[in-house]
Amino acid sequence: MKKLKNYKIALIVISALIVGGGIGFVVTGFASAGSIDDSFSFQYEPSSPEPIEELSINADIGNIIVKYNTTETSYFAEIDVDLKIAGLFMFGKNYLDFFNPSIEWWAESSGIFNLEVLPDVWFDPSHWFKSYEITITVTLRTDVIYDIDATTANGATEMSVPDEVILNGTSLTSSTGTVKLTTLGNNKFQGKVGLQTSTGNVDLFTKNTNFTHGFEAFTATGSLLLNYTNCIMGADLTGVVSTGNVIFKSYNMYYSKDIDLNLQTSTGFIDAEIYQYTNMGANVTGNVHTSTGNIDVFYRDNLANTGVRFTSSTSTGSINYTPHATMDILGNVYSSDNYGIAIYKYTFTLATSTGSVYANGQSAQS
Image (cartoon, rainbow, N blue to C red; front, side):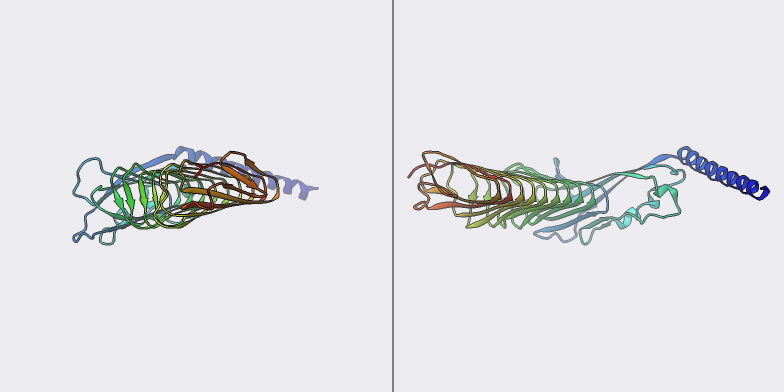
């Protein structure tokens, strides 16, 4: 009986130590809570400028914003880093406890910027409770042609291109975050343009822009919003999602050669709107596919030399075509009455396994 009593006393003492230690740990953590705020600026001015300047921006964490200068500058690029690290046990800490030194972030000779986070230290509680707020702003010159590759592992990537700016290849990537590209008009991409994220949305808003080598966008979990106004497409256009929706809008696209238009998702709906009131220049073969979800296509043209045809299929669902005087319905085929003699053609395959297909078309009669 005495042994049992001693055992209970020992348990009480150990529990008290654990609870007391835990309370002390928490109290100490909050007592030393705080934040680290720092800002850094880097300039890129190559000794021997190239016709196309290649810039690579990489971050383990943080939002990347690419923009253009509003005032004249001698720098070919300027990078501003604003970082805030907040959490418990921050007393006596600085950014070097979490990041590599700033002088190692920028390799001016190669045009490569890397913001690298140090690995977490398991025995340092400041690494357990921290949060980051990081913004990397890249400012470019409007009179320089760049090849841009911007990648962040955790954060958003955003780029805005002002009027009358020319770029070469452009790649914007995020592992976890939104990717967004906006062009304001009279722009030209001399190389391929690609937007990609693993978890997040991809948004494109572009007008009066020439995509000489086509365009592609991918996301694993998220949605695509692709919006084109008076643009030129010089190669295939692809938008692919694993889990999420695809929204595609095209107004008066010009195609400099025959292309494939591929819009696909595994789980989600696809909504496409196509308006063709100007000469399209070439033919488009459209593949619009989803495994689980509906497909909805709205099409309009007023050109006698332009026709459209939709061929649809579904395993579970229905095929729904909107009748119109300019459109013929024959089984699962929905086509403009001038499709056979049209000079330029949109030819679509609409396919879903579980879901319905809706198409609403109107085309000028020959």
